[in-house]
Amino acid sequence: MLDAIGWFFTNIAQAFINFFYALTHPGLWLDWLSWGNAVEDKEALMRFIYFGGSVEFFFVVFTIFLVVAAIGFWRNSFMWLAVRFLEGIANNVGRLFAWAGLLMVLQQIVIVFIQRIFARADIAMGFGTPFVRDVSWWSEELKLYNALVVTLCCTYTFVQGSHVRVDLVYSAVKYRTKKVIDMFGALVFMMPAAILTWMYGWYFMWRHLVVPKPSASDTLDRLMLKSKAVRWNVETIGFSPNGFDAYFLFKILLVAFTGMVFLQAIAFFFRSYLEWKEGPESEGKYLDKDSLGDEDAELVAEIH
Image 1 (cartoon, rainbow, N blue to C red):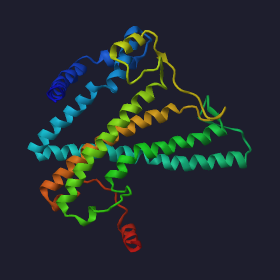
Image 2: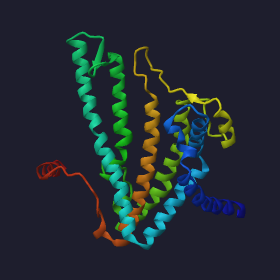
Image 3: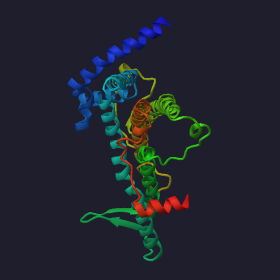
Image 4: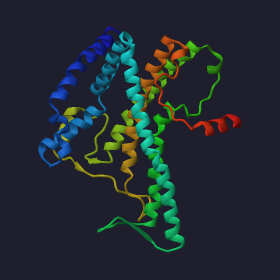
């Protein structure tokens, strides 16, 4: 028991060192962004892969959360600032990628016209040297638009209060009890689920981007040995010969989705705490919620 406690606090203390060391030595883990196939690029890539799913990275994120929470408990205005910032990320990203739904509809209409009216087997888009793909490629690409909406608009929908909720006791309890339930849910359900999904999704993504394939069980030393032979091997296999061949994007979206859920769990915990502390008058404070307009709101009220 004492060993576990010692390990926990040692990692928290080490997190400060790791965080500032990473900030002051970005070349050690970001040099691969300017890929030149050099030894330094390969080693930096493997460090990035390792630390992205490592215990060290977890404790850096966890320690930042503790520091922000401690300052927020002391200065509630700081915590409200964090809430507005994190909810702003969810709202802005969600509002942007919600347009993917419209693109999906428009592209489906184009596909139907090309197939049924013009009887073409391919579609070309662009000027000069157009981007030409088989109709089946464009049809399968519609899945990507759907994935963009699902993964990148999920937290936006959560902030807007539009997710379906199964309510057994929540509506019957008092206001402050509701906020305690919300805090408990953010800490016990949202955060652990996001962490587990990240751990699996991170290496799942990189196994479809580089070879030799990294593993969650690989140590940093082992990955550094693999770096000598590492090369990009981006997944381009489709489900059909002429079908969509960029399914690696779905793996990237999974990681992005997980990160956004984790950030929103922090924002939800902070908001629930502040609303619990400040009382019912603070419910929805600073909440940037979309409005349907007066006429639409009246119509929705009449339907309900």
